[in-house]
Length: 332
Ligand SMILES: O=C(O)CCC(=O)C(=O)O
Ligand SMILES: [Fe+2]
Image (cartoon, rainbow, N blue to C red):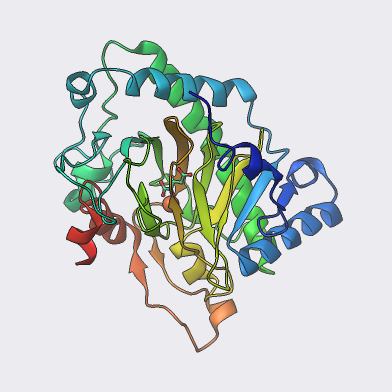
């Protein structure tokens, strides 16, 4: 099936002025001055739109190709087999289907996910959240390559996320290692997202994934070849953030906005797959260690914190409880 010009070729031709492309290579191997320049460019993007594309990130192309091949193979399986590795409230890892619905509305969840986490040692101090954080991943038993590719990719993401944290810190005018202690056993999540086509008759109000912000500090999104991601500009217009070859799409989430006391924007985005073929994406939702309490950093907020303090495990548990639901069940 051919992709519509709207979402693929034309999307590539849009001006990238709004979502800037930043080369991370000088941050990974440059001088202090070069590192600060990259961090400043990232900070400017985070203040203006909360999104940027990252090239020169050092993640091997093969790691990314392999994880997409794994996702493609998983979502090509019959539903009963996908459901064989379903996530449950008691074991919060695995496949989350789209709710069965006769019709659809602007509030229907029109995508599936396969979610996994790092497998860190259990935290005896936090039995309350053991079901969410202390279980192993629910890999399909008969797909060894899926498991291998996913584990290799998780490893690549934790490495890149630690580098990005240093860039965010420098961009905020903080010591580069300001966030390091909070990411020893990060409660980060990797998701493979599968978006079928929007149903025929879907009007402009209908999205596969409704407008939302991400709940953690930031997200490292790998888009496949098919576009569909849209970002809300400050003037209220939705702009396309199409895949840029070899680049990650990085966005600020709620926790980074809170830490920065609102200087960095956790921006609304949505997915509308109108490309005429199925879409895959692989976001890595970076999260701090589950016991961390996130609050505006005192050195940035002074005595005027704009957000309350929130414990990571509590915040994520509340969010995960909503994941398989349709948005209207969550937002009313
Ligand atoms: O698939 C995408 O491009 C974005 C996914 C997303 O926003 C999410 O999973 O939170
Ligand atoms: Fe998102």
